[in-house]
Length: 163
Image (tube, rainbow, N blue to C red):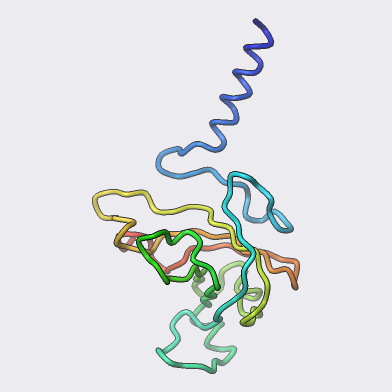
């Protein structure tokens, strides 16, 4: 019976780590070094599609260091991870305001750079958020293979429902 209790306690502890708590999923620390190989976190190897300041004008193709520093940065990937069937063709991205941890690494990214993209969390449906109609509120962790460093963040400045 003692062996059964130990196994049951271990299963309960594991369930507490990976189960939703108050609408959020507990995930490993995004600061862990190296690519991830967790079975419970969806990760794909992909490449960078585009890097631009967060507030870039539509069609703008060249950017200054000052724009990245003052506006933040947005990195878009050649992956649709986390977007689901509700948003076919919408690429995964990470967006940072200015002066956030990881901005420097994000600014150094170039189209074609190989990265590991991991989907950490998505929005929880509620009165103001329908995650099938609002693509915002997806959280990602990115590991850059060339620079051996990672960053994380949300795909938009605001969460699902505008918050």
